[in-house]
Image 1 (cartoon, helix red, strand yellow):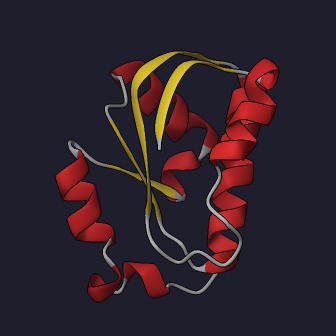
Image 2 (cartoon, helix red, strand yellow):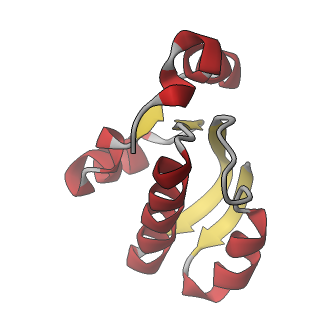
Length: 106
């Protein structure tokens, strides 16, 4: 999922349209390259995404996360549920179902 602009409550409906369908088990990789700003409501949207994915057994990764947002992910505990990778290829390789990540219990 390529994210862009601000992740806030104002973009909630657009963000929801990007969510994977219920029951999807394929990994979701969030690309933060185009993200300018994430506020607390945006973090809540990300937490909702994680909950939905975990319920389906769908692993979540993030790429192109700035040092600032890596720190915030750590502070709020999102890095416990969203694995941060240096690149999309690494994320897809590690999160691939054949590596066991796609079959985690929620």
